[in-house]
Length: 300
Length: 79
Image (cartoon, rainbow over all chains, first blue to last red; front, side):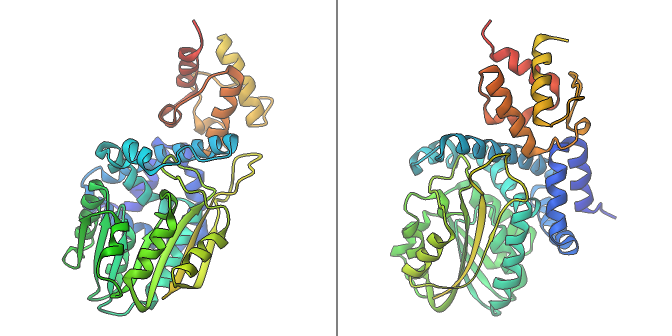
């Protein structure tokens, strides 16, 4: 009988990353039973995709990533601005580096489970978005990164199919491996392509577009929302998430208010049906910025 | 106790609001209440201010115990 992947994760965190224990306990406290169910599914896919030692390696990456994020937030508090302003800077230092991206993507994958406010976003995805998808839905995921959001949708919606587009070769490889681990690879295709170029593709055919945590990585996020509006059929759904006043080395667009994201949706012909803004349980002492993650469900 | 560790303990006591805190080179996050990932960065920022140095994110993420922090501080101080 194979070991429970959640037990593997929690045991490893306690042994090797004691600084991460409290935050994970906060994440589980959001909804303990649902956390455990979500964790076992995500971790079983992770273990199948990465093989033996995969959970432990991803936890190592997650602990490093969390430290980097917290330090970036502290620098942001001091400087009043994100470290980078240009996509080209971040691409050279980050997206184009396979060695860095592999660990980064698995760390981000785990953050959807192990950060309390991202558990809230995950539950929004499960409660508000997934029930609206019909069997056989045609999905597009823009910048899937680790691929976890789109694979989750494929796993829950019978006969659905998905196309994913990302500029990172690491993303394409990891998203494919995750889809395979979830048994959904026959219904998913991933293409290395700048999602913003999809504005020139045939549009108006997707039943739903998923785009999680991309907008803050762009110089002109309004172009992204234009692409989402272009790809959706009338009546189609967009599931979008983004970070506000939350610094990371690869965040360049500083969203300050939730209303900015609502307006971007509206200007792209999307009507926001539901939204959630979630913040970490604790911030740095004396912080003037409250980092948030926002999820929006919008209808074309 | 080295001068660096002594000065570092002043930072520890202020950050964790514990006048009795006495970290040794072997002290880890398991030994200090509230030393989680967020307070770790708060500690690092205050160490930077106290010693006039700056850490990289990789250095911050990789620290396993107080001894490693002492060594890192001393490596960054002028000879």
